[in-house]
Each structure stands twice: as C-alpha cells, then as structure tokens.
Image 1 (spheres, one colour):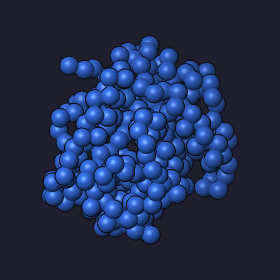
Image 2 (spheres, helix red, strand yellow):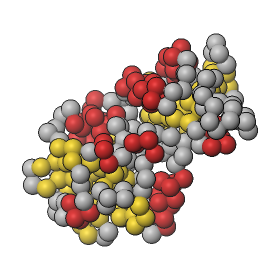
Image 3 (tube, rainbow, N blue to C red):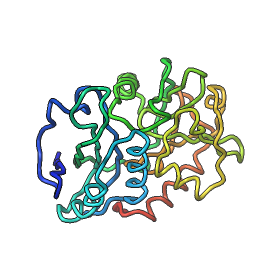
Image 4 (cartoon, rainbow, N blue to C red):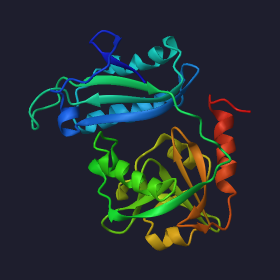
Length: 265
C-alpha cells in the first residue's frame, strides 16, 4: 500500500495516522473508494462531489484544495489499483467541531476481478443500521464482520437488511434485483449509499428505487451488485439457489468495461 497525507500545501508520503486523530479514536471519518488505472481515477469528479457533500453534511471544514490535488497525485505517481480518499475529523474532543480535518489517500494493489465469475450471495441475519443515512464512514466494522462471516461459509457477499426488514445493500456494494422487466434497487431512505456505479446503472436503464423486502430478494429472477472496484458484478446464486437468469447484469458489466479506463481483453 502507498499512502499520502495532506500537509496544508501538498501531499506527502506517510505511513501512520496520529493516535490523537478522531478518525482513529472514534471512527469519525468519511471516505470515497475508487479504482485507479494508469494514473487516472475512474469517475473521479462524481466521487469528489460525493465526498465534498458528505463533508458538508457532517460539518467537516475540509480544504477543497486538498481534494482537488488528489487527481494530479494519482497521475504523477502513476497509480494503479484500489484507492480510498479519507477525510478525518482531526484532533479534538468527541463533541468538538471538525475545524481542522486531515486528508489521507491510500492506494493498494489488488487482483482485477474476473468478470466471468458470477458471485454467490447469502442473507445476513443481524439488523444493519446504516450510519447517517448511508454516508461512507470509517465505522465499517459491521460490514467487515458480515462479509467475513459470509466468506467463512464460502459465499462472496452478504445482503444486509435494516430494522424494518428492508434490503439496504451488500456489505461492500449496492444491489439491483430484477422481477420480469422491473429492475429495482433499494431506496436511499433505507440507508443505501448513493454509489457512483449505482448512479451509472440508473442513468442507463429504467430503475425503480423502492423499499425491497426479503421476499423481493428471494423471489428475484436476477441480481447483480455494483461498486467502484467491481463495476457491475453478476450474481449466480442466492443461498445456494441458482437464479433464473443472468442477462441484464452481464450486459451492463460489458457496457461498463467499455466506458471505463480498466484494461480489457
């Protein structure tokens, strides 16, 4: 992994986070994840806009100059892999304003996902409480634990439901389900994140944002998940049950690959 911290004038290499930072102490941090290929961040501007909006919602007084310097950083360092931009609350008491947030950028190498490897999903039983209406925060333990449990059972991902038994998302991805010609995704009010690839899909297909119950998931003919690393990932099975079809997901996956900077065969 390669990491940088904003010094106030430029990004400098770093290898640690101050123990006094509230991002470390209390999980008070916001982030955006994106794929970087050949020094270019995919959909960088939409990711940046979401991070700036999240900082505004949580009243983090982030320096826009720092965030604008991330794209040149990717280019100059010839970055390749999976990147996260973090804005932490900086030092202070838990109740103090985030007047001097810190900005960190991490880039790590990852094996490229196999677009032909359709995933197997499971349903997570514990109730998920999305923080701040689905903002991406550093408090990711629940998601990581649910994903770890799924992987131990040899599933690729797990679907999360809120306290009203509504589908929210997968642990690290948004979700789309298909019934006939009706393509749906969880409404933002459930706690679903406003993901960049989620919005990409919704700009290219008629998608209904609605409250999806467990039975809507278990009766789906097709499911696919989206995030900035995978793009569009088709799903083969749910709780071991093969889904009826895989048409829309693979088609969108091919369209996404054709529009992005990621390598293609």
